[in-house]
Length: 471
Ligand SMILES: NC(=[NH2+])NCCC[C@H](N)C(=O)O
Image (cartoon, rainbow, N blue to C red; front, side, top):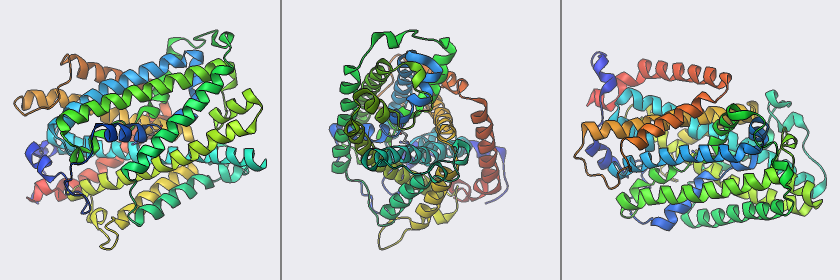
């Protein structure tokens, strides 16, 4: 243990040790390298397309107008740049644990801990946001099926005109039960769901394009460049998840080649689909019609066709596929906390595993309770923006990590190197900064409070209990 020294903040975990520990995060994970490029791409697309594209237009189009299509391109470029940086680190340090492990190996323990705190936004808080979006489509489905919808009081958070968001909590509870039973989404189930998601979005694109009216695209950018930037910041949420590809490091065949390819392929598919959806949507109704539209894509279809079944198909597809992403993201969160606890930075409760189901029970309960509380009482926009904030900071740190590792350990074998070094990591940091700048003030304030709480835990607990301190 010993005394606290400032140098402790910079202590790094040797890359070799990080890699060697890979695969022992949870007892049920072996080192079976069985995932190939196709499955990996499915994993990336599956972890990325969630609530985002189904709800983002409601706030993004009023901010940017039809130029929201440009915002999607900007957010997509940011995701691509950061994903390339991720790919280099993933191919150098091919382990689970994601940016937390990378930061531990490159920027030292303190930054790694802060990245862990950002990941809590990227996973837990995003799971809350996803659950809230799910509830919107559930309610829309009720409306299509039986002409009834839940009253706002039990379907919305206080800041959004309700009291308590029941559907979101029900979803989190269902995922909790599955996770406690040790259910993990299988690779096959994921692949089926990805196809379902893509089909549903394609269905939207085809019908919405049939009602395309060119005059809806004018004025193209009524809110100017600032509006396009602000919309890009809030849209970024929908691109989060591609880094999930790099968290599968342990189980991928030929990871140094497959990881970067999987990231890039997933991104191309996701960006293409998003831009098509956005273009079809802004062509189908005037940009002023988007504000406040809940379960927006379903409503657009019903308004356009006058047929409830079109909306119903979209709702059912969204409900099934968003259910699964909640499970995946909650699972990811428990695994990150597990890794931080194993390193001694968080209390041991996070690694206690139920011998029967092999799942970290208490960890899962804590995660689910946290996610359910946020989902019940915090409005969707706040959750979405806070998620983007945390993720963008973590991504910027990963990009810096690429530069740092090239300098400190130039000879480490790298299966993949970002092209045009150092342009790509520098641009990546720049784009992240631009999107962070576009987030609203209240998000900044919440994030500052979050950071302060993380520092309190680090200095009050982790700095003394760290494995690197006690080793
Ligand atoms: N860590 C994650 N994979 N979070 C999920 C992010 C949300 C996802 N991009 C969506 O549109 O709903």
